[in-house]
Image (cartoon, rainbow, N blue to C red; front, side, top):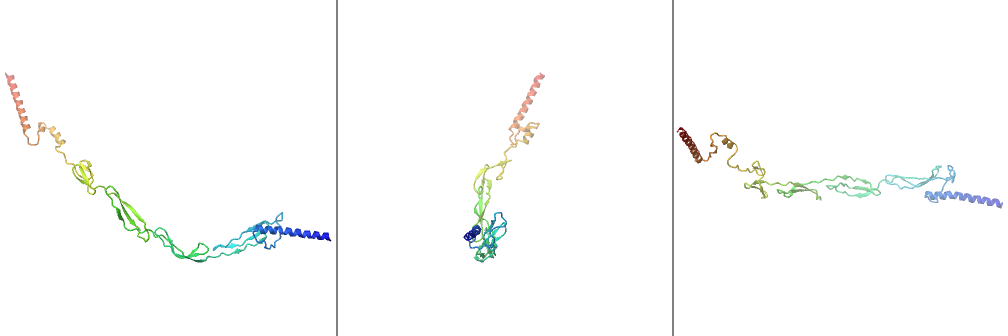
Length: 266
């Protein structure tokens, strides 16, 4: 009897030890409390070694828009569920934080007032306000242009709180030349002087015309050269001296001819 009783006690002890091992392993691998009561069989009927293939589901907190779930544990081989993962409904938004209005500026948009969720970044009643853009006034000359240097004109934004400005160049005026004398001209704006720039007898800068030189030598000279009476050298000033000399030469020539004929006649 004692022998049979010892054997029975040994079998019970071994059975309890075998049952305790899977339970401890499941509790550790599934990250669940050791107090969880498992109703499933200890051995897996789908594996050769009889061990369950544990599949763990981690807990996930719900958000305003997405549901969550509790942690769970099951066997991927036999499908037995040891700890059921339960769904936690989404929380919905809690619009309890006031949002102040942000005015728009010339370059950046703003927002209207409204409410913000206390759990996330969602808003209610908050609308975007587009940037207003600049509103520039009239152009004002801030640096006068000169004959050789460009000037500057500026305009400023008229919107409250905006300090933006725009600038543009004013082209240099260039010289306004007028005749000073026969050699130079001068600028009416800056008093600078420069020599005339003649082209075809006229200054292209101020319009001054170079005076004509006396005694044309072109067509009148050729006309005199073609004269058959040799009077092209007679000046047109009223001086008769050349005419008198020409007459004396004619008389001397005639006298010489007469004297020669007289000698030949003897």
